[in-house]
Length: 443
Image (cartoon, rainbow, N blue to C red; front, side, top):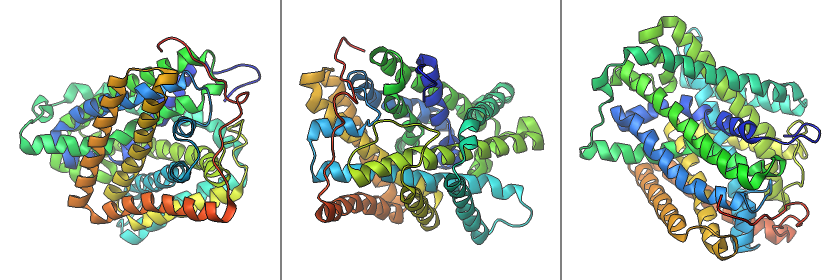
């Protein structure tokens, strides 16, 4: 995160967040979005970005005043104290990484299998999903610092592929294919897709996780959050316009596991298909690498010990190997049990619960740290509505995903109850010296 005494500047932090957000989700679930929203998909990214900004307001406000790498759990613990609920949320926070690994495994298999000779049978797909997770787990066991150093180039490759996709494909768009439909089915499709594609913006929280390593965090945390969401929204909307505008919707839906690669064929041919496919594989590999090597291990430390480490060096990611093994193993289980639709909706629902508690924490902390209560309340109600829409969508389209969401939420609560009964551990705030608190003007 830092080199010597040098800390991250504004644009370095924005690059970190953008590289995280423009990751596996845009490649993995784009075809699913086309199936749900049809030609309204570009508009879905507009709505999803606006919803993300409502959540980002609380992240930006609190993150500029409570400087801690332990966020968002630091916000929640300060607001609600140390109890069964916050303990369960620490396990739920860890589960966001577990389920993300399953999503990345699904996405990797979706783009990798069409490159192989022979039919992509369910058995072969399961083997690829397991193999990719085990491969990166093995690299973690061996302490692959070189993979961490390669992340910059992986991020550059995936952004370059998407920008090339947009630059070359925008000239062959057929406008009638991207005209939005706001009739009954069209609006329902927009709402359902927004509930799922909300997870495409989940990486903006990484800015607050890096706040202790930033220059002037009270100013740069909110700037980095808002800039990253703005830049990512532009990329997402342009990619959606080019994909939906170039490929007939039935073909896009049929190729939903590798939709962006298929969308490149009309204007780039088979070479474009291969280019986007390999770009997707690099992107998803990067996301899987970062999740296994970084966030999952630290989140597991929080769930196990009740406090995040005071320092976090991305080249020294493994403090406890059991965190790696358990996280990878559970990720494989979710990948094998649920389809892409189920994994995507479960991932989104779990992140939404964390966001709801951050918004609720900001409401409770507002007298001390400030913020506009109207914006906080609006954000909470909108995100709560998105959560309700997502549960309705799961119930109507995939009951196993609905049950999976309930299992994860209830399992986190039960795990914390049993774990506390055995260990008597308590979630802890970091010492004041470890997370300086900054209060000041409006970010």
